Length: 98
Image (tube, rainbow, N blue to C red):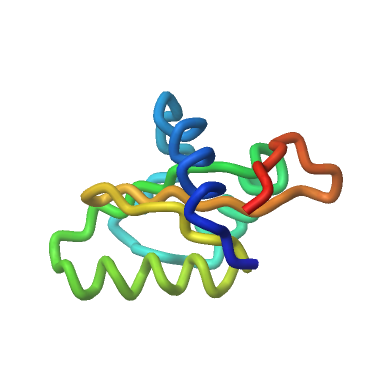
């Protein structure tokens, strides 16, 4: 699912007050962490994931893998925090027409 700039701006505004729901630990991106992200997306639709990896390239790869594995859309990346969105079966967030 691709988001228009207008939709991304809307989601950024909604994401601003959110705290990261999932924090990657020392083990990095594991099956358990991916399951946690899936569950958070199902419940919230719009979440922040904190990837405290120092290596910028590795951090980009981890974030790209999260998007690929979950089928979510990346809204934005701020430092080590990624904001992702995936509509639920019955969406709670109404996106503006893009």
